[in-house]
Length: 123
Image (cartoon, rainbow, N blue to C red):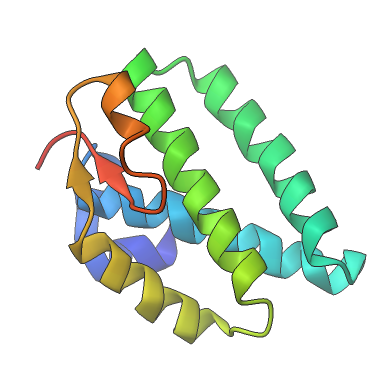
């Protein structure tokens, strides 16, 4: 939250590109912290998915919001798994670049068209 707030101000609280960044980075950061204990990238990503999926379930967002968040969370975990040695600064830089190319969606079924791309709902 602190990194998102510093980079994007309150914009990360909406459904725009800043929110996409926050979700992807949140998952990377959880994975990185778990890796210190698990010593295994896959185990860290699985645990992170369980926790963040549960969070998305209990927040009771609208369906499109939830699916967007789940998608962006998965993008963050995939990035972590491909870059296990990356430090926080490198992760921030990479996800910021991804954020610039995030794609706007209006329907849940559009999300599947952007497998390796962050998505957002509104500006």
